[in-house]
Amino acid sequence: MPVPDLFLQGIARGWQVIDASELDADRSFDADVIIIGTGAGGGTSAEILANAGLKVLLVEEGSLKTSSDFKNDEAKAYAELYQEGLARATQDGGIGILQGRTVGGTTTVNWTSSFRTPDPTLAHWAQVHGVKGLDSASMAPWFARMEERLGIAPWAVPANANNEVISTGCEALGWHWKVIPRNVRGCWNLGYCGTGCPTNAKQSMLVTTLPAALEKGAILIHRLKAEQLVIEGDQITEVLCRGMNEQMTRADGRSVKLRGRHVILAGGAINSPALLMRSKAPDPHGRLGKRTFLHPVNFSLAQYDRTINGFYGAPQSVYSDHFQWNNGTTGPIGFKLEVPPMQPSITAALLGGHGQEHFQRMQKLAQSNILIALMRDGFDERSQGGQVMLRDDGNPVLDYPLDDYIWDGARRAWLAMGEIQFAAGATAVMPTHSHGRLSSNWQDYQEQVNNLRYAIYDVRLASAHVMGGCAMGEDPMQAVTNSQGQHHQLENLSIFDGSLFPTSIGANPQLSIYGLVSRLASDLAQRLA
Image (cartoon, rainbow, N blue to C red):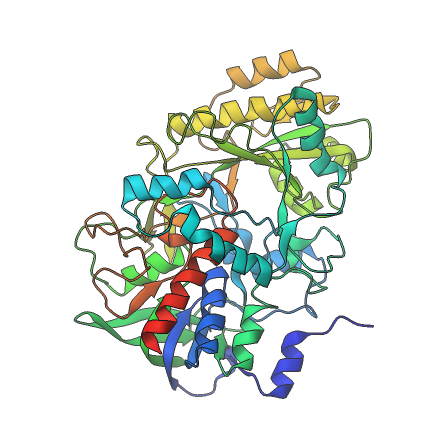
């Protein structure tokens, strides 16, 4: 029996779904609430507000792709489903950035890891950044609500060999490790979560909250770019949009004007600040786009004399926080240890090397493991993150300076990852550095890591977690919104995405966004009803 396509079925029943690239005339729409972005924040908001009886209109710059379109094809998926065709990076190219650009946003293409916001993070936000009402006890029922809604639970299936490297190595060393909760139901364990789930098992916004909102009468317009908010006094009076072309390369289609009682920005921690900048939104204290964080990630490759096949099975199912909080909340940067999926294309980009050297590394793909370290930026005064800016064409770019604080974290993370990999039986381990080489023993690997040059382009870095830029907090001199996500200067604007976070999370952020937005959107629904 074929996997049902929820959108094809829904559209046949009368869902209001519009492809802006096909509009043959300029249009205007009115709604109670306009939501810009359909990822974790936008999707969660849409269901809650539509269930409250409000007329909801959703704007998505990306295109609608569904289970019928997902073919486990890296080349096609990266071009169609990611920001800038998976080529988004920091301004200097030092960190590659993976963000979704499709209906469902990054939830459609992420690797399903779902963690509650760590208690030390919530406490730090309250103590240092003036966030109110979001302590662990207050947030627990909202996390529980979204865990039930999205099937989030520790993965009950045995980990694949790629993830087992963490558990095996940590057990041998006496280090902490644990099973990752995943937002899946009836998962087929294919391993290609990053290219869109063809079985609808991943409980992304694409198959949960967005269909629920559309059933309640919400309108979805995709391939539509929100270009400007029209601001009069403390009110947004219109949202000016333009259709994307079919190839998703330019916003040169028909003009679309949107009017609503309330506007929600949920475009993510690069696009939401950028839209406010293009709109010349009030920013009297210069906080907009500042303190944007990434969980900068570095990688360690290990080769084994056994088959790993890291491209099959749940991409992430085991993690270690052994080095996350052992220096306290501040101090030297802490990091979370996980693995990435190892499909050939994305792995080839990580491994580097040229010619025969690269060929030999890829030849051993089936016997290789990669560990990643998510560095927890933004907690120490030495870690101020980056700044979202606009290019000459109005599109955003993130300037994220790399300094000794990050480099020290990368060095310590490589040492931790290498020790785990050797403890798990690796025959050789290599830091993913432009001058990295395979070390056949722990002592040589230590010496190599401690003597590498730590500089941009030499250390291969990436991120799939963009946070901050519209930080919440009660002090308008330090924050863009209050603790309810309401803009300090614009009365009918809320920001409901990861840009609210005053620091990074210290964990994969999707459940943090789900839980936080579930609470904030529920409060907003009561105010607007």
